[in-house]
Image 1 (cartoon, helix red, strand yellow):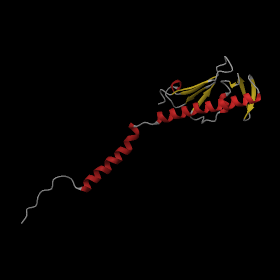
Image 2 (cartoon, rainbow, N blue to C red):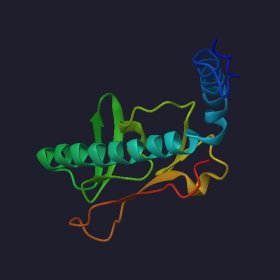
Image 3 (tube, one colour):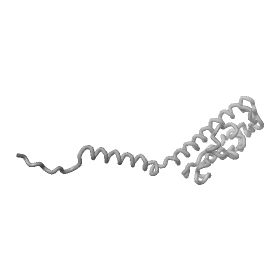
Image 4 (cartoon, rainbow, N blue to C red):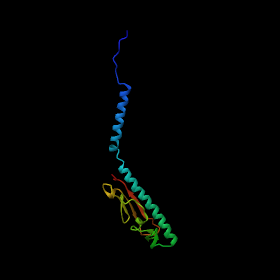
Length: 146
């Protein structure tokens, strides 16, 4: 007769149970280690920057068509003030549609409300009024959007 050998190691069921438990732990713990909120806020600020570029270009086109360099034009039921055929810093925000729960705006500065410091998570619009050929300076800072 054969002698029964003592089993060494784990059964397949035990291994599957351990893998399932590790998977559940990883799924609950991963969001705490992989914080994507900063990336999401950066994306919102970059989207506002893109909207600023588009809005400025479209408004500039309208000013050129109407022959207005300095003055006001009504666009989308908003009175937009132009300087050198580009929207001024106060008027550019009227041309954008953004979620006021995420962004606070004032005079060409669009800061993310949930960032730790607004100046390191913002999009900016600065109408350089020196000559009509100068395009407004549109930029963003996303160094600290956490």
